[in-house]
Length: 221
Image: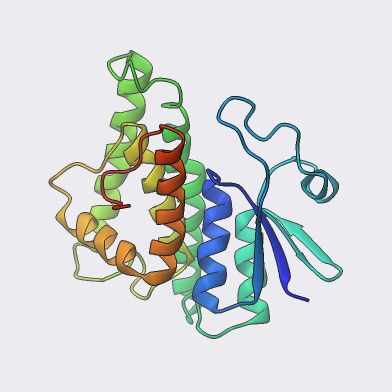
């Protein structure tokens, strides 16, 4: 039986797991739970409720293994199929990648969450502060890439997947990358060109267009 991954059409964290499964070449059946722009994920999918006390996607079921949280799913994928590796092979490299993956979710993305509902008033002080903080983080990552590396820690990793999907939401919600972060913009182009990334990001962009939402400017549909 293939693994089942419960995700959502606008779930950043679900998209992270979807991309990782494709990059690994894993036999995963993705099931999009019901979602509506007004009701959101209500009523919650029964399998999501059963497995995740936080009542959120993504949820992964592989036989008697039932886990949630995109980072935990990353770790599981890496254990069951080490090749191709999506964490660096060195101890220090893995530590750096895991830190950046966590910071994408817990340092950068909270600024983007603050922009939800403020797209028509981006001059609001709360929006201005959130955008400023996001841009400041972009400049930190630009400095990481300034030594010529192609991906955040050198080799392609889960850290790249996490930050790319966070940037997907940042761009569509009013905090696009500034034009002077050339290395970071080139990194985004490389990421968008990856088949697994393009497949998932394009599907999400198409969904946004279908419901009258704004897609990121760097995704063509």
